[in-house]
Picture 1 (tube, rainbow, N blue to C red):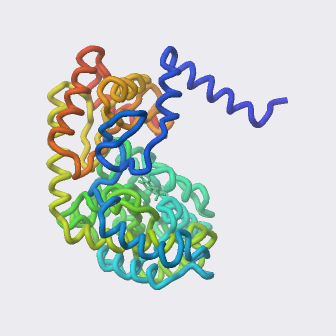
Picture 2: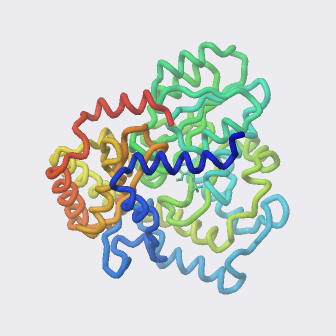
Length: 417
Ligand SMILES: Cc1ncc(COP(=O)(O)O)c(C=O)c1O
């Protein structure tokens, strides 16, 4: 009789086969131990200085002295983990309410619920909102927490092909007009850096009387005139019903949130497992996030600097013939055939002193892999050039990918994660 745990060995054997002679490199990459300040552009690791282009501290706020001071003040006086209660019990403090009020104002929504994780904010909201006889339509490349919310919901869930409006409309059309519906998408897709076509999705939402949730974990702080994200970028903020996100990227801290109408946020406070059944975001982090939200609005020059870096990186990589698709958020993915990204990541570290992220199946379609680069505004043009030169050299020696971006998009659409 088959054993439940058998699949674990099967999985590792498959990884071993896929990596082939590079399996040791896979172990090496996955066993990297990072220093505590790993969001700095230059880190000390494995006995030397390395350039890291692998965290989501896009605006460089993680180590901003004002944010650190805010967290330290709370920790010194009240401890690191306080308030140690779930939000509806003993976990709500004046700091949580202050952050919620400021975020709702920033997002231009009526209300906000601060969570201890973006994952819980997204999954919990979708799961509790989509009740029996209701339905959620999910982009097949949305973040895993959006998928989880759809799977946990009592209602029906269906997945449309990534950014495929015709497929979304076909599915919406099949659904009775009076059946309550939610469309759930990412603002910026974390693997490809592509944006959701929000204006067109909004048009469909209105035509078929659905509600729209956008997980803008990657877009907030990066896109839009004021950093309010993908919806601001497209000028459709008021048409998005629920704005979700994380603090663990542009805010440089930790935790997540859901912003929206007051009645929905109140419902979440009673019904969402991701809010009710888990301890509150620690007050020290809440205080730091209040500060970085303020910094985000006070320091727009950081966003401009980030975009200068991104534009330079993308122009350089394209010039070197690397396939990066059409990224419009802060993630830049260099697509590679098979597991070719694995030896590239290894070589980047060991030969060029650069730490980038390795992304393999199932986070991307089978037979592809990604060298994922996330720059921050703190990187210098010299840092960016170093990444371009290293990848150009590796690619010239042994091409990472000979397909065109269009082929990659087809592969993505055909192989939903
Ligand atoms: C698009 C997206 N949504 C949600 C999350 C989850 O956020 P958190 O890490 O705060 O749980 C992430 C984090 O990687 C993300 O990229």
